[in-house]
Image 1 (cartoon, rainbow, N blue to C red):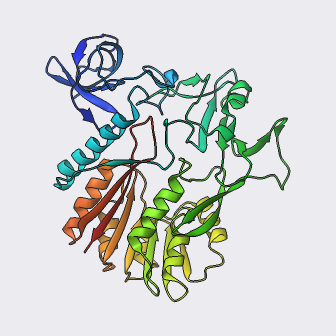
Image 2 (cartoon, rainbow, N blue to C red):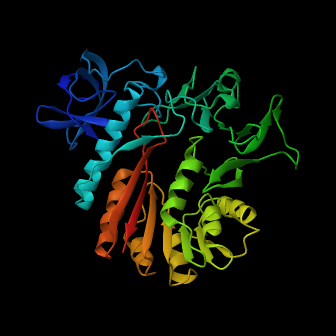
Image 3 (cartoon, rainbow, N blue to C red):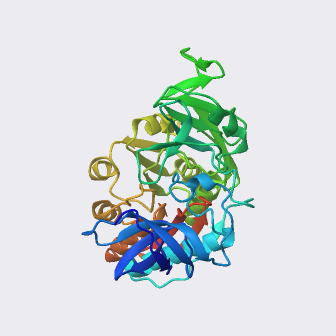
Length: 405
């Protein structure tokens, strides 16, 4: 059935950037549509034995009032991932994401809560926010991205989500080694942008193989009234929205509060985005135990936290560290797990620390809802939730959940 194009009436939004429609009794998850629209759908995955089908809206017969021309047509039907809500007004994007967060909490955690998705500070048009871009060179050396759910590389003519400091037009105009991975970073706070090709620093004339060539950047943000500087490897993980470090670390700091002498555990700590502000909140009489499994991020964290001896860094998986090296008691636990969430074993180990408060940072509504349900089994109640639109033009949404025992 792949390749056929039925006309469908689009239903509600669903997790993952789709809307739900039905065709001949079967659910079809449709991208590039809006609820209520009548669209012609190109079926992209319609195996006869599949529980549901997938498709792209390729013609809009009855548009929604929330539909606008996408600022990035290359991320439209049949195109690259990373801009699948470009056809939706910004207010409607946030309404879309709020509905998804609320539905996942209701379905997976049994919680019926009103959800509002906040815009990032200074956000006006949803463009120019990405401080990190990953590109792939095609067989001709043109920079591009993978098509949605495909290994095929589509060369790009534009990337309007990228920060202006990155000069993405110049990156797209160059020719690169075929098949190479191009990482472009535009740090916030004054450092020059950085380009790495397969991990090697790259300048105007090609690779910079000097031992002293720069492979990391400094990121700056003010959190809880204090200015922080983090060193982060160019290929390492860091929040990609220019406002995200300030907003997320600020939300975590507000949830934890000033706690002189407290014991805090920071799980999935990365380069120390939350660890540094947490160290200031507990002071020299307190203790912060931070756990990170990625060797590059752990090395960055050691550099970023070397002047705070009351911070203890633990390498390895979170589950192993909780079982072996992290103290058995804590006043507060902060966790920022990967997209799949923390899971049953980690939640149980966190709950065993007896923390009065858990601050959970999540980039996936379904994973958050599953973890909230698991924490409820250990006596924790969701007392506040902030949902943040740190990925405009995409279906992704960040959330900071506070759970109290």
